[in-house]
Image (cartoon, rainbow, N blue to C red; front, side, top):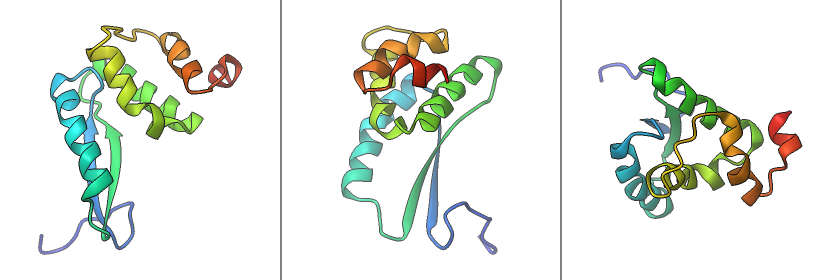
Length: 114
């Protein structure tokens, strides 16, 4: 670009992922992204996850992500949310459906409901 666009990452290159937990392509890409983040991301780059909201059905997944972020567990649970939906076939229709998954990661029901 002739002129850089504003980013949230200061002087670092911002690598922004737009995703949807129910997207099979996002699910397939996640292991590649996780490997890149663990082994190959350049020092001058910062990775930012952002749920894509492009139709009404994607709003719920954005709420899931922002709930996990507010609870401080998104980095620990993000991959497992994909596993629940795509491998264990738990579709997560309501935020309350997350409760048992969150408890596995030490998030109490009272913290979740706060």
